[in-house]
Every structure is written in structure tokens, then in C-alpha cells.
Image 1 (cartoon, rainbow, N blue to C red):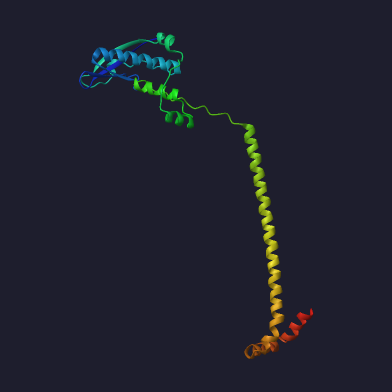
Image 2 (cartoon, rainbow, N blue to C red):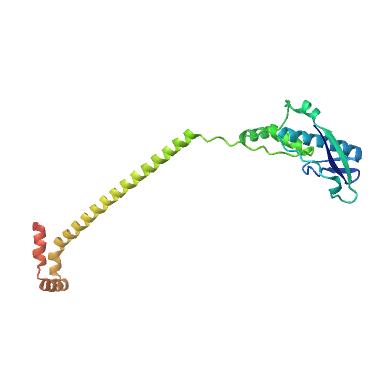
Length: 229
């Protein structure tokens, strides 16, 4: 496919010229002198358009050169490219040997990092080509595993409810037993202490007053409790 797009040459330090493409802000090139910069601009534009075709990205229409805003001293030029030779030459992968330190290989293995993709992206950035983010495919949900997980969750919830109910019953039984023990202790204390308290002058006077007003006999009551009536 043949294209024609606008390139803007901007003067840099010394003989350096920076090349930008108003229709492709992510693409750029630079060279020493006009000839070198023009060749590199053509190469970068070729690769950018070829890559867009490979990725299925819509290629925009060329902007009107007369409406492009440039700085004083900038030079506008047209670049003509044909991507067909690139498809026949580069539309396939090749094997290459890359030497890296062992720790990089270990780190890449632990993080499932694709070194080929890293090299691919680094070269694209180095020559001024855009790097397209490849979306990570979302794995299809495993319906069977989800159903199993839900069953396990329901079973766990049921077990928790059973354990909670068992704890409540155990607590109620424990409270009942403690209540019985407290009542028995109080009755036993009354049976043991009533005769002794009656012999203490102050306490005896108080108990006699209570006996008179309530018409009861603590000793008889204590003996009755000890006798079982």
C-alpha cells in the first residue's frame, strides 16, 4: 500500500535534524544533516505504517500541510512510502540469539516475563516507532470450579452455624449448672451458719428481731433444711 504524509524537520544542535510527523505524533526520527534525516524519516514512517497494518489499526488521512502549525525555521516536506515490500520481507518471525546476565533470565522466569516481547518493544522505542499495548486476554470463567467453590462456601457456612448453635447450647447448660451450684451453696451456708450466727450478740439480736417480725425460727428452718423438710 502506498502512502504520502507530511514530515516536519526541526533544527537541533549542530547538524542534527529532528523529524516529526503531524499525522503520527508517536513516530519520530533524527539524523545528521538533511540527507540522513530524510532517509531515517522514510524508514521510520515505513515501519510505523507497516506495523499499523499488521495490528489492524486504522491509518488516518493526511492533514492539510497548509494548516499545520510549525515554528520559525522548521521545514515541511512530503514523504512517500510503500509498505508492500515490508510485508513480503518482515511479515514473519525470525530466530535470534540474545545474551543476557543469568540474573535477568532468572528474574524473567520468576515473573513470567517474555524477553522476546521486551526486546521487540525496546527496539521499536529506539527507532522511534510506537509501542502498542497488547491486551491480556481474560480467561473464560471456569463454571465447574465456581460451582464447587460455592458448594464449599455453603458447606462451611452450614458448619459454622452448627458450631455456633452447639456453643449456645453448651453455654446455656453451663449457666444452668452454675445456677444450681450457687443455690446449693447458699442453702448449705444457711444450714451451717444459722446456729453460729444466733450465738453472736449483735447478729443474734438482729436475727431475733427478724424472727419476731416475720414469725419464723432460723434454727428450726436450718434444722428443717438439714433434715430435708
